[in-house]
Length: 416
Image (tube, rainbow, N blue to C red; front, side, top):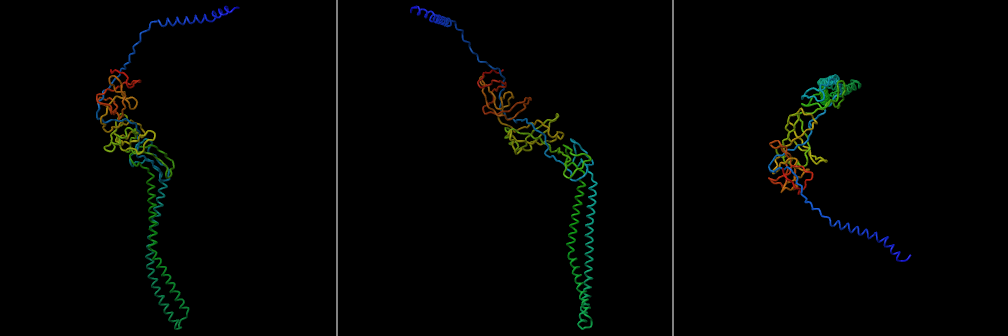
């Protein structure tokens, strides 16, 4: 096979397909380039229809709605002070009691016996004083007699001494006279000592009388305490005993609270604290609660000295006038009227995004503004509005009151 034949075969087998493909690509590109172009579409910006509210800056006393619980600042647990059986329980949980009303009666028979014993001990101590006084008078009289006897013995001693000296009488008679004289002197010394210690014996007996008197008063007090009385007008929270039980000194029997000590405890968010503390320094802040169709007035009594570690607020205690029928532990809404705030705007709640943002409408474009909530307010028409403050808000500004999920500064809107 010659060289020309080989070259021909190479050209037909390899170069011809390449040339055909290149021609096809060139033809396709020419057709694509000659296709007529579609006209460009004009993009129109979407306009969002929204509602708006015109701002009017005013001086308004805001209201804050809080949540609180009814508590009693005066709650007591009555306990038995004696060991006795329970004769009668006159009350039950939830009952109302008046001051001085008997709520539990204990068996007093053992205590009456103790009382009788204390009375007898006291009378015995008083009798000992009377006996000692009589003995003292007897000792004084006996001392006079013994002194007279001593004088007689002294004369007898002198006479016997003279007789012995003259050797008229035996020595034994002088010894007897000496012994009698010394015995009488000893008797006088004992009598004088007894008389001298009379004040000490009387003081000791009087001390015994006092001790017995105290024991008697304790017995009388224990007897009185067998009747457990209500210390104030209140309501029973729990009864921890029953008829027939034996209670000991210190056993809890009843828990109750003073219905005149009811108060509402509510936590104040940190953002309202400056206003409430300012108001608390002067006139008391007014508040109210509603329960079973009735409205009860509250008054800020005090603020807690301890802040909440989790939320940063502090507890406020509102005194409750009336409302004794409200149960302790009841959770209620508390509406607090704060001091008047200057230059605040009353906006519908829908105008507020998150906690501190609104959108002002300027030339149909939205503009985000940061605000600070200062409370709520009910308009004369009954509309519930939120009071806000912002240095950028002016009277006459239009604020969007529609909640748009894509609200952002610069968004095109149209008020309806």
